[in-house]
Image (cartoon, rainbow, N blue to C red; front, top):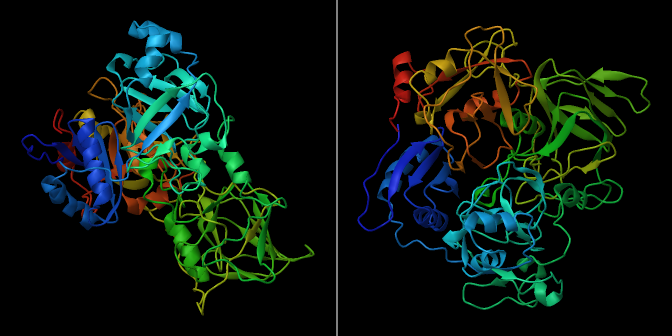
Length: 615
C-alpha cells in the first residue's frame, strides 16, 4: 500500500510513496521541478542506508541497503524539506550542433514553424538536464520552447546514429551511441556524451544547463575541445584546467562503441593488463588463466557497481550473487572479488602458474586435464581444488541451473570500470566477454588467508519457495506487490499466482521472459485496467514488468535502470539467485509474501493488494 503525505503550502509536494520491492521506494511528485528538487536533496544529503536515487519524469526511485532502512525512510521522506534543494555542481554545457536531421522538415510541419524557426526555438532557450536513463550518457533535457512539443515517430528507427540531436514530447536529448529510437531527429553533434576516461563520464548531468549552438560544420580543434563546459562559478574551463574530453568535442567521428571501448582494455597479445590498485599482482612471473574456450558466454563479474543509476548505468554484477559469493569464500577471496560467470558450460581454462579454484552455481560436470592431455581427474563442485601449472579445466553442460561461477584464489586482477570489474551487457560497460586466447591475470593474496571447506550446493533441491527444484515441479518465487499493481484489476493476483509460467529461451542477463503454459487451457496473459502508457520510471532487479502482451519479464542484473511498462510485483532479493538459474522451459509460480517476514500471504491478503482504483 502506498503512503500519501500531505502537501506543504507553496512548496514541493510528494504525491505518494510506493514500495518497489523490499528495499526500494518509488516516490511520486507533482512536477518535474519537484523531481529535480528531491533528487538534488537526496544526492547532497542521502538518507540512512541509501544506495542511489534515480530521477525520472514524475518519480524518484530510492534504493536502500536493507529492509530496515527502507521502512524507516518512509517517515523520513514524508517529513523531508526539499524546497530549497539545489545542485551545487550544476554547470553550463554548450553543444555545437549542425541542424540537418532527417526529421527537421517533419518537425516543422508538426509545429507549424519553418525549419529556420525550429532551429531558433531549439537554440534560443537554455535546456536543463532533467534525468538520466535509457542508456549511459543519455539525459532527458527539459525546459525548452513549448512550441517544440512533438510526438515520437510512429515507427521507431532500428538504428539512430550516435550524436543525433532529437525531440520527443517536451524533451530534447542527444543519443550517446548508435541505438534504436523513435525520437524526431533534427541535427547532429560530435559532442562525446559518455566517456569513461573522464572523472564524470556523462557530459550532461541532471541540473546542468544545456545550450545548443548552431554551426554550419563541426570543427575539431584544441580550443573547441575545451570550450564547451562552464563551471558553476561562471568560469570557462581551459586546456590547463580540465581534460580536453570535458567538453565532449573530441572527434568528428562517432563515439566508440562498447566493443571498441572494451578492445582498448586488451593488450595486443589478448591479455588484460594487470590491475593498478592495491590488489594488483606483485612484480615477477605473472600467474594467468588462459581461456581456451569460452563456451556460449563467459563474463567477468563481481558484485556490481551500485550508485550510477542516474547516469543510466545498472548495478550489473553476478546474476546469481549467492553462488559468486560462495565461490569466492571457498578460495579465501573477499566476497566482491572478480569471478568468471559461464552460461551453459563449454568453458576451458589453462593455468600458467599454480592456482586454487572453486566452482559454484549450476551443477555441471568438470574435469582437470594434465598438461599432456593423457589423463584427467574430476573437478569437484562447491569445494576448493588445485589447477597446477600447465593443467586445463574443462566445464561441461549443466544438468541443474544455467550459470556456473569460477573463482580463483587472488581474484581476477583486471582494472575496474566505475569501481567494478563486472561486464554489463546492457550498457556495454566493463570487460569484454571472454574469448579463446584471452589471458586473465590472477591477483595476489594479501597476508595469510585460509581457503574454505566443502559447502552444500547453493541450489538446494526441494519444492520450498526459493529453491530451484528439478524442473518437474514449478520453482516457487516469492514476490511483493507493486509499485504499479493499481494498473491491474482485482483478478490480477489470481492470474499472476494461480497459473504456471514458463521461462523462455529469449531470456538473458537483462531478464527472464515468461510465457503461459500451452498445456494449461486456462492459462492467460495478464490484463490491465488502465489505458495508455506509463511514463518511464526507475525499476529494480526482480521487477515483474508487464508489456502490452501481458507476458511478464522478470528483470535480472543487467536490466535497464528505467522502464515504461507497469511493474505488477517484485521478486524478493533472496530468490533472485534462483531466478538467474532458470533454464528455458522451466516452470515457475509466484507467491505473494509479507515484505518484512517473507511469510506467504493468504488469498484474502493478496486480493487486497489489487483493489481496482486504489493506489
